Length: 347
Image 1: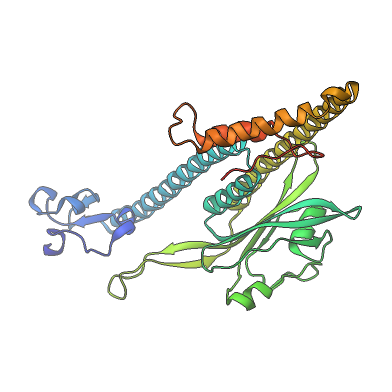
Image 2: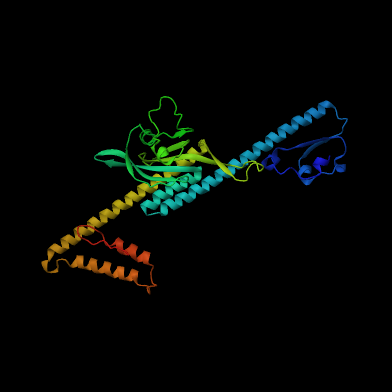
């Protein structure tokens, strides 16, 4: 068996787990085998073995390979699930620690795309406009094309995929947006594709639902990418192809969207508390100013001087007590721009 005395072919790759050997004739100890092949010998029968025994050995090999393949697939799925769970935990920690709204929205969208291998994505938030609810297009990302993002308002109805998801609360998973299911009320807008020569194929849209059941936005992911290792004889480059989103991707996106909804609501609550505090400070200062005309304007002068001191400290190169960003953050927090109160401007 000269073919088994050397190493396996270079193109075997992952197929090595689906190889088993049945040796007929001769003793196993007398056959020179490469370690790769010796580890895959399952049966060794004498050349005079009955046909029934050979057939049973072959059937056993098939069952063995099926079990081995199923076990390898289950192990890969388990590892992928564990990785997704760890990633979701990390995302939850990152979202809860982020206080800047713009960075928060960027983090939500970028992490969702990473976890689902999406090439592009967009984020919509529900807001009130002229007494009516609408969808605000707040973020978009795309790894394939460069573009200038512009926020816009969409009607909160079923004419668009995002509007349908926001109204119904259903998950929409489309393998190909150019072949929509019959009877659906929504349509996909190909204006971006035509302008930037992009080709949208698979789309996954999930609602962002708050703990009290309100739908506050929609997370939309576009074009799931899968890496393909080509034949080395043809090309040495790893290419990617657009494939539909799987059910596991929908579960991950739904979990992340729920965390994102909590983070967005917490940020809105923090902004409301900050506005309330600024209003309280303004009312208190106004009441104090009106008590004594002789000291009128003193509070505003103190605020301006405090901001000027903070600006000077942040510009001082010799200052090593606190970082510039820390001073600026603390000063701007206590210099509200409300009815004439100065807002500190940092250079």
